[in-house]
Length: 416
Ligand code: NIG
Ligand code: FE
Image (cartoon, rainbow, N blue to C red; front, side, top):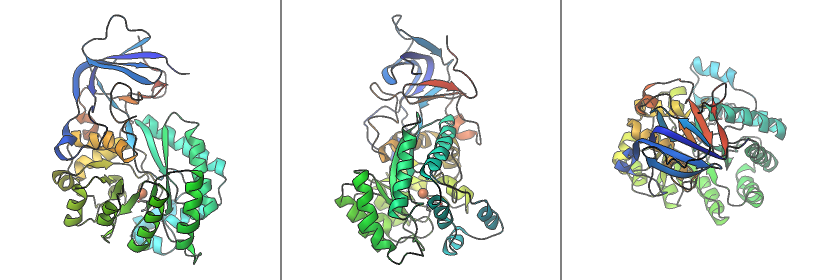
């Protein structure tokens, strides 16, 4: 059921209005706040945003926000939400002291999930993905990037991407797929690197033209030289580039990704000050994934230094069964303030408009502006700092994603 017209009145609105471009450095603190105003929506599009009460002529349903904060729905720009199986045994090994890279090099970790995904049906992947997306939406997320990367053969990577696309047609959540065929090294396939670059990538780009291409550049995963070969081939096919770099080891991938014109470099926990400055001075967005540090080892990206150097930072959950079993953007915001040194305003920018820029969706989502999709969340409180202050919460009071009705957790929307 779509709602034709709805007006949300009496709200403290964080518009995040401005150029549909990444916000760098001090600009990350500007939330474009309207202390008390209204947002008028028609068929899922924002028709008007203004201070004061709405005009008398307003049609349709009216929702009184009661002075609470209305802000853009979160954009989760880095996730691995499509997977099968579980890694509970490995979690117990981790609790007993085995590290993430030790588990990976012993043939577990990402490869354990690869085995589970290879033996799963496409429909099963779609179904579990939809269940996870539903929970993410309830936590305030309107857009989710979902990576492949647990197939690592041409048919299995295509199966994952088809499952992600099938899910995107069955959920109000806006889903953006990314090809991550370079997620690990398949130890059973001696031709794996060349096959990924010369066979899987062209097959994927053939079926999903201009799909973004990502790689996990790390010791025990993809080397800088092989990542470069892959990304250059992807660029030739018109695919935007992203990369996981410096999660555990600084290998030199970050400056190379900037030089290759990557949209984002993600992780950055181990980035050197010099590489961080190079990234901050570029058009490439840095993506921090603080749930990883929380779950794995207490190491976090130097978000404060990056923003102070003029960088454009986004944050994501990295939702995945190994390094970040966390669907919650509110928790990512809370962690970013505690461990990356961000202010609440900066964390909100990182979780909305800057994350939308990572996905090239800044014309559509990430701010509350006329013409954009009405992807909104109404918080419980009247001060947005509460979002960063509280943690492990159940999410916002209401969420609206485009033409889909506002939902109250466990029930109907309130209206008058
Ligand atoms: O971003 N480290 C590489 N990829 C994911 C983890 C995936 C997994 O462990 O299954 C990450 O942390
Ligand atoms: Fe990741």
